[in-house]
Image (cartoon, rainbow over all chains, first blue to last red; front, side, top):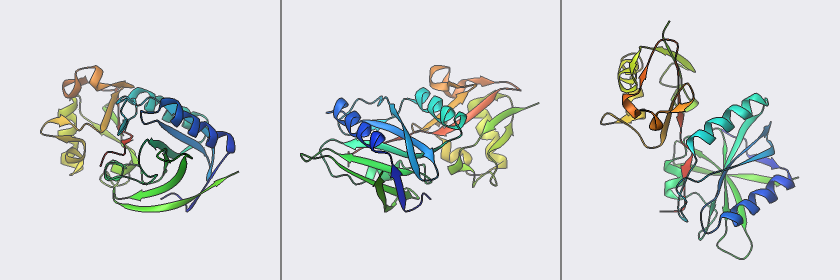
Length: 136
Length: 93
């Protein structure tokens, strides 16, 4: 289980939003890493589905990034993706495919004028709990 | 020597907490069938009807088996097999 707070550097936070806008109208996805509960690196990943309503990370990139994170002595702290036309809240599909219980699922909602970013833990592929996202 | 199989955190509850187990040489599907004897439930989580589930990635020495011979990819003693859940989702209801 991730803790109930996730700290994220402003640079990473802004990069995440830029990535979501850059690939719009497709969903963006990526991996957040760092140590303790502090995110200091972001890895933009390829959404092989190139879809406005779903994402699947490129499997080779995923393995390489997971190894790179370990090589740097860091941890995978979060998985982010964008919702291009809906709320920043885990959909049924997000919950069903949440295999990583020990990380935060960060969602960037682009439905409104201002992007909304929220983070959640998802347990047993169904129980959703919000995590406080602290930028700083 | 055997085939080394890396088990991801979500499946370690089926392997008594082990992050690496040993398997027999053969095809990937034979390897998983054999492991399921020792660790019941593993096969169901990884495959369905003899096929690897869509949201499970299996790598042999870092090559995704989808780009090899999928379930029929053969592994030999000394090879390393990694089972890694895919990262996926999306706003589709």
